[in-house]
Length: 168
Image (cartoon, rainbow, N blue to C red; front, side, top):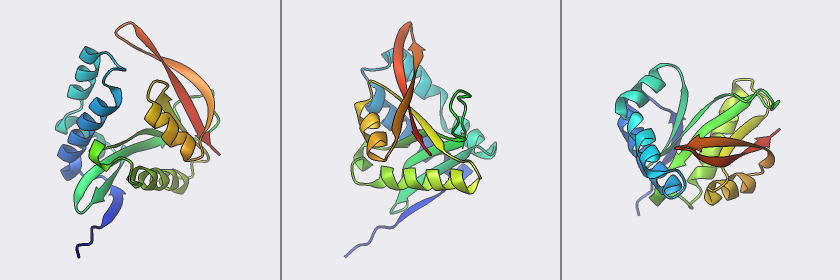
């Protein structure tokens, strides 16, 4: 019998290539048909290996979830950027490779990101998700998030609503 280990840890520069792959696969899966194709492709291409290596070195908090030594997903976290919301922490991104979705890894990564924010003394947390990304909305609602605010993101003159979920 083989046993696969699951590890959630702070990303290291050597993870940049794997994170770039996760980013590309997850964003294509999540946003194809929602964000206009040209814009989505441009957004993905801007975040290659060098971009991720720099983000990790710049002290951005990037967490990875590994299963059997393979990076299956990542989360980026920090201080809340929305001044109108009183929560101090924010998960900026949380993505998994499509083949690792739906088996509980996202929830484990989410809980680890939430705990890391609390360890940094940040009280409360916010996550934004595009309203058309039904999987994300269901995920955050299923993890106890309260939908408290809306905003808009514009992609190639296409305005998309986004929803803020909060945890106290």
